[in-house]
Length: 333
Ligand code: F6P
Image (tube, rainbow, N blue to C red; front, side, top):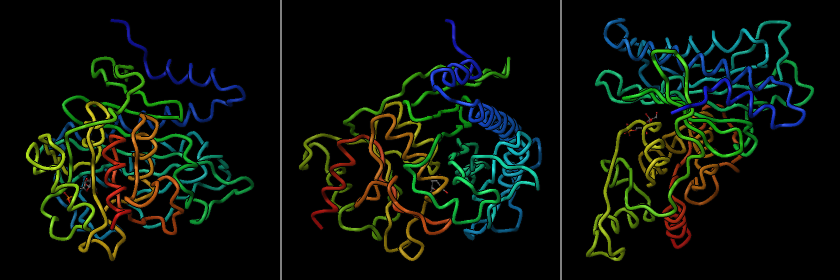
């Protein structure tokens, strides 16, 4: 089997875009390097002595793991040397990270360096999620407001999944392609070209322990799934919950399904559970590019205009017909 390396893939993609300067290709190369380095750190597990809590909290009030901080440092280090970024923002940092004097890149990188990190200690898949935006024209030192762009403006988005194999899944707006890391050569190889989400599915993912807090539309949808063949849907459904969004989205890309982390009575004060700019938006771009849908339940996720860097949001994404059904239930409320 002859597979293409991610470097060849990126070069080829660049050649297909008339007027491309190669900057985005270099930025993506640095993101690839970050993901390889994080994969290595995650893979070493307890050998590195980095599995514990740090005793500190991030801006979301979540306990930081040593690996969260290591992964964040890896992303910052790997992505600033090129000088092609104007700024970065991360789940692990309160404020945007600005580039040193004299660096005037044209892009912004937003990332969650280690998503699902509560799974790290128990050796369940975790991932990194990233989103690339254009720095607004004429802006040399981007301010917070420059990062608050709706998801439709993303130039590129993707994730790395540190699972039974390490994979990188990306979109630059022409479909979704998946690469598997060959640990022998250190290369990501194109193993999953043009991934597409099945329109229909019989698998849902939600944290059922929040059931009593859900809005009526979600209760109705899940209740109908759980009733299976004897309920209004007339078919049996399967349920999965990895508690690692990257793993859930990956599964949905491969075999369809719906993922829901709605705003509910428990998280309403924060606006939801998942972060808009570096979790929901990049995943929404991937899902739409793979012909699925991504919604808050009431509107297209990618059209939300952000008002805060660490803003949270209601997320319902996956197989088109299932997401449409949930949206219909919200409209009927
Ligand atoms: O921070 C995000 C995250 O870890 C996601 O990856 C995952 O989907 C979710 O939180 C898990 O939430 P819970 O702890 O409610 O299962």
